[in-house]
Structure formats: structure tokens, C-alpha cells
Length: 277
Image (cartoon, rainbow, N blue to C red; front, side, top):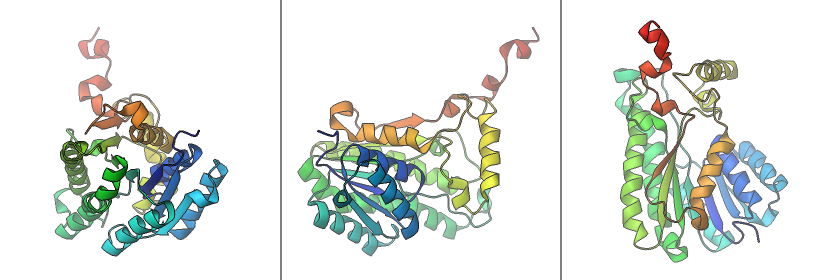
């Protein structure tokens, strides 16, 4: 029997990047998966990759929806129930560093609202709307956060960082609330991952490639010397969704960042050089 055979999974933000890789991995393991995002063409690409990975057509549920819209959230949940009859796993992956050309403390309150709406409030709403069904199946919730949550600062995008920090604390709170009903809640905190994240912010692909190359080549940015791949994070999400493999992990945010969050400024330099030896 496939690892997730008979399990019903919702993956938000599954038209690209980590969400797409996660949906494809669940499909490979036999899950029934609802994929959702705003771009129908990109969702179709995800669906075809899932079918290629071995999913049956009837095990793929496509919902084109804007996750910041309450009615759209209802459609995602109800269509999953209509097609699969239950919900076993909710992966809250959708998120964005919303931009308007401003940075630092110059960011507007309007940008703050938009950022928190997708990165935090949408997660709160999806959990509230799926809670009763997850309790019935004693299911799993995995939220996708970021090392931007801290404790190191991200001064250029304070609202993005703050929204992910809020998500981390919400994950902990909900985990303690829901474990009494048999529902596990955890999160993953990726570092730099090649997902098209900067492209979604309006930057051309060559700029993203240049930024990734810069960070991967400097040990003060990514000690591992390589950017993460969406599949790296997908494997972790699936692990946390698997009760047999991660049953005793409750309310944790698992970091996958190639060592980025461990580096202080002094660590980026050779000790002998610092001491003049």
C-alpha cells in the first residue's frame, strides 16, 4: 500500500515552487490531493506532474481560487469534501512577500494588511474551516513559515518577517489546542529556496538567478554552499504529515536552510585570519 493511500490532502499555493513539489510528492505516495492557486495554467502543470508521478486522475482535485477570499476558502474545503469525503492533511503553503516598491520602515500600512492577509490570516481561516474535519480523521496540519521569522532581523521587509513570526507562534498555540483532539500541528521554516519567489515579486528571472548564485557562493549567507530546492522542503512537509514517522513532533518549526540561521558575522571568516596567525 502506498504511504498516503486513502489520505485526503489540501495543499494551498500549489501552482509553483514548494507547493507544487509537495503536491507531486503526495501524489507519488498515493494521496488524494486538492491543489489550489490563482493561476489555472500553472495548476494544470502541477496536475500533469502529479499524474506523471503516478497519481490517478480521480485523485487530483483542482480549485482555482484566491486564498485571501473567504468564499474561495469555502470552495476549497467543500470541493475537497465533495470529491474525497474527508480531510486528513492541511498544508498551509500559500504566502508572499507582497511588494509595492517600498522597504524598511517606509512600507505602508496598506502593505502590512495585504501581507498579513495572505501569510497569516488566510492560515487562521483555513484552520478554522477545516478543524472539525481534521478532528474527525485525527489529521495533520503543516504550516510553511520562513527563517525570516527571526531571531535575526530582515529590515528590508519587516511585514513579511513579522507575519512569519506571527505564524510560528500561532502554530505553537494551535498545536497545544488541537493535540487534545488528536490533531498534530507543525511548521517548516525554509531558508533560501529556488522557487521563483523573487520572480513573483516582479523581478526578472536573471535577477533571481544572480541573487541565488551570490548567496550560495558566500558562507555568511548559506554555509552549505547551495540554495535549497522545492523538493527539499516538500520532503520535510510530507514527513511532518506522516503520523507513523513523526508522531511525537508537536508544535515545532523545523528549519531547513543550509545553515543560514546559524551564522553570526564572525563565523563567516577564518579564525586564523581574524587572529592574524
